[in-house]
Every structure is written in C-alpha cells, then in structure tokens.
Length: 134
Figure (cartoon, helix red, strand yellow):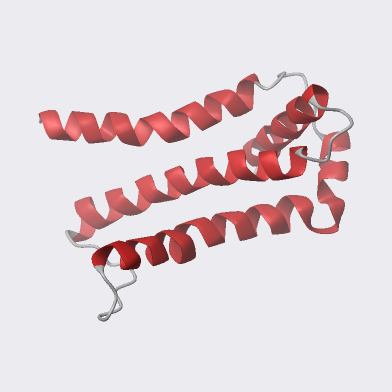
C-alpha cells in the first residue's frame, strides 16, 4: 500500500508543481493513475482467465447487444469504474491527499509515476508480443 500512496504523492506533487494555480491536477492525476490501474487490472485478469481457467469469466455478455457494446460495458463497469472508485475513496474522499502529501516524501519529481505509468501500459504489450512469438 505504501507504493500506491508514494506513487500518488509523486503524481500529485509533480502536477501541482507544473500548474500551481490550477485545480486541473485532480482530474489529471485521477486519469493517469486510473488508466495505469486499468491496464494492470486488465493484464491480471487476462492472465488469470487465459492461463488458469482457459476461458473469459470476467465479462459482461448481454444477448441483445453487439460484441462491441458488450466490450464497452465490460470495460466501463468491470475495469474503469472499480479503479476510479478505489482511487477516489483512498485519495480524494475527505481531501485525504493533503494528509498523504504531508506524510510521504515528494522527492521523485514525477519519475516514479512516469515509470509506473509506462510499465503499466507497455508490460501488457510486451507480454502480447512475446506470446505471439512463442
């Protein structure tokens, strides 16, 4: 949990340092961290479903909707919503980010959140590339 909070503090402090007068940092930090978490959750679920069970069980499949519509619903309700909700509850509810900014050091200058974001996005792509080769 410490890594989660340290990464959030790094993200918030970096965005606040870029635009100190703006309140945009809240939306931007929520977007960056939630997107990274969505990629991580997608990776974990795909690996669990393919390697352990052999079929997709974490999926919304409404019969009268098209495949693309079911995919969008799955993405929104099963992947994006949980990540945004967790981030909101753990960081923004009750302005908890203020306590976190005081509790954790912000000496990474955005490098930690950048590394986390890049790893979260490119690790699934690398896995997909490696699995297609073998």
